[in-house]
Every structure is written in C-alpha cells, then in structure tokens.
Image: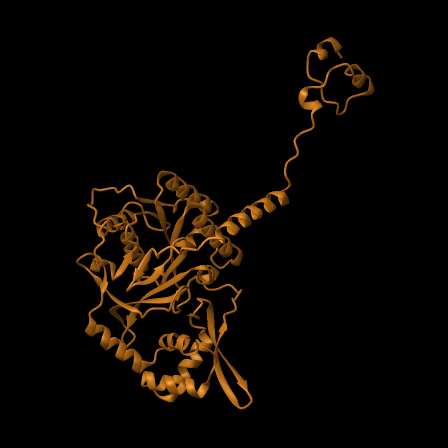
Length: 417
C-alpha cells in the first residue's frame, strides 16, 4: 500500500483490512466527521410525547377562555344541518339522485346569491362568508359526464357556462391506482389549500372508490381516519357520497358502517314506491343521523326538468303519499317513530304496540309484523346522541319491554353487489 498517497486522503475503510494494512494507516488523521459522534436522533416515543404535550398545551389554553361555537355551514329552517370541520355522508341506491343532491349542496356553498333560491330546497349556507368548493370525482368519464356535472354546479350557483370561478376546484382520481388514491386526494387538497385562505368544502363522489375493499374493516377505518385528519390539517368540511346496498337502507360494506359511526350528518335519498311497488316521481330525503340536534322531518322532492335538478314536491302529492304510507305502516316509518318513542327509555311492548296502532291506523298484527322486521333487519336507527342503535326486547318478570340498544358492528363481509 502506498502510505504517502494515503496520507493525503481520508482514512480508508478498516473492514477486512489486514494487520499490516491497519498499521500503514495509523498516521492518517481522522476526518472531522470521524472525530465527532453522529448526532442522536430523537426516538419515536419522544416525538409522539412531544406532539401530545403540544396538544395538551393548546387545549389547556383554549379551556381557559369562553368557547364560541362556529355557526353551521348549512342550515334549514334555522336548524344546523352541517357543521364546520365535520364529515358528512349522502347515501342512496343506484339512480336515487344522491350525486345530484350532493352537487346541489356544492352549488349552495359556491353561490354568491344570499337570497333563498328555490333550487336549494330551503337549505341556506352561513351568511357573510365565502367558501372554496373542492370536488373530487372517482367514477365518471371525463369527456361528458364529469364536465356536465361541473357545468351544473356552476350554473346552479349563478355562474355562466363559460365562467371558471377561482373558488371552485375539481379533479378526478379515476385513473389513479387504488393504493395511491389517498396520496392523490391529499396532494390535490394540499395544493388547493395553498391557493386560498377560504374554508374548504370538499365533495368526494364516491368515497368507497378511494380504497381497495369496502368490506375490509381496517381499510374502512383508515379511510375515515385519513379524512378526519384532512379536516384538521386543511380547515375543511367533507361531504361524502356512498352507494347503498340493493334492497336495504345500509350503505355499502364496512365503509358504510364506519361512515355512519364517524359522520356528523347522514342523509339518505331514495325514490318512493306506490302501492304496487312501482317507482313514483317522489323522492324522499331522510336525515338518518344528525349529531347535534333533533332530526327534522323528511323532505319530499321531485326531479325538475326545467333546471335539471331537484325541487320540493307538490304538497298534494306529498299528503297523499304520507297518508298511504301511514296505512301501510312501513317498517322504515315505524323505525323512525321508535327512535323518539323510546328516547327516554324502555316501554312495555303493549304500550308501544298500542301507540303505533293509534298513530298509524294499522291493525295489531301489522304493527307486530313490522316490529319483527325492524328487529330482524336491524333497520338504520340513531339515538339523540347520533349513536347507531337497534330495537331490542327483554323481559322483567311477566312484563316484556322494547328498548334501543347500541348496534354492534357485524364484522362478516357484506355483499358487494
């Protein structure tokens, strides 16, 4: 080895060197990097603790001041429907107008007109504040379907066809790999956040397309953890569209279950049937869940060809339909009534059946059959706190009771059809 040459270079690696080679390098000085030990990296637990302590400090400061709650972003009849920084869900079967209703709410947040436009079905947005609407599609084709939907949102909000309002951003993740769709959503919303200081209202249609398997509990929980973090990180409110399992009022798979648990407001929209089981022109919008208030009455809507959107249904058509449903004593209507009837605690079966018979004008046998259906099908029900519940029954001595019980999640795979 040429020791003269080595003296002018860094100390060579010592691995696999012979004793003679080590001796030849003894007078080569160590570099600055070799003389100083590498800086100690903070351990993962230390970083976690620091984050938690920072949050504690922030919460402690906030807890010493009066808490001023933000006004709702969307309300109706002076009742808050969608709150700031929340996750909200619109569910419905194929062809139920769920995307059209979601687009209507997006238009409402985008409009500069403060007047009560009938196209917004009585919904009103927070006054004296502007918003940035961020629309992320997952399934429409980008030549016709998606541009047409974007046009509809703009025009309903009061913009011309050729206008591109800077507070309306949109994209599609349809062509992205399933494994990369979280990153795609985060990247786009982060970019939008850098371009505006307005509160973001983000619409994802359809949210189950953001993951690989909507029947996987881990993927579903990860999805809503991810969206919850986006709310906090980007000052955003989310409106998620999700398909409903055919023949049920349950949103798809474990993602649907997790959506019902995590969402602040859950809408269900669907086409009503007549006495023969055929579709009518009435569309029912239900509040399946409203975390911060008593659930309002259903809204009945109709499709309006004039503006290619939804409008409030004619009063006479609604009255006739409600009268028909009462005589039918539909299981969904029975379930809705039970959430208020049993809100204060259990009731004897006899009292429940007697009350429902009187209110629905139905026979005893019909009411009993509907109650069995509510129990067996575990129809979607929430209590006053927005917690998913089911109808339960139990006995004390000779008396039998009905009560609302917490709904235990079914971890078996659900139909993907």
